[in-house]
Length: 305
Image (cartoon, one colour):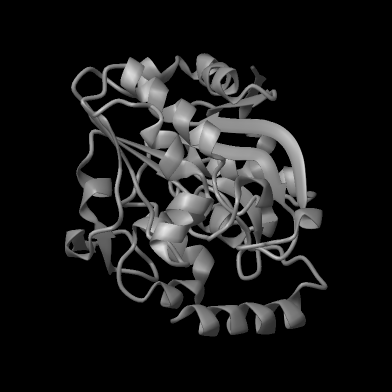
């Protein structure tokens, strides 16, 4: 699916279905066993993004809980669109920079930053500000690189219900610590794009096919792409015309980060920032039904850092 076809499908979907918010079926008996203890989710607010990243990680044990000395780390932001940080379509560069610095301080041997973009890659990397932010760290261990198509490898998805095999970026699978760092925003097909949706940036092949039965497909992928840590960038949230946006009128600045080891819980909480509930998001419900995390807000320990 090329960009023109993708946008056409978004417009068709939006015209027909955005008048009502769908609720997806939650399985209470067939889902896998729930986590034995409530997951911990940390929320922090503030305009100093370096300090904000440190604060949101503190209740989880700090970056040192996830990154050990000598680890190879992947930090996967959303760099998918040729947009500025103010437009809210990509992860804020200062947040990405702060997360990479935290990983380096924890002793990472190498921190890789990359994304398979939708718009032309060099423009996305430059205009998002993320490439410049990584270069400014001035540390040879911090590396931002463009996708190498030769690194996509076929991966069997043994627990998949809709997907049983897909090409996934080798570095995302082989690293010691995978940190998922999406931006929270509206999406014309999935309603929102958050942690589970950010997986699209490490997929090869025809990603457009994922948008059919997108909720179950993303849940299936979550059985093999398992971040140690999810940090959702809600410093600026795109309320309409996602995923690429464009108008500053669609953006609300709320200077918020959400962090958890449970990607389902992170997405569940983030949905509420848009006036939605976890059960409104197909991927959240599908992942919950597969036992990949908790979506009930009253069963999540939420700490304001």
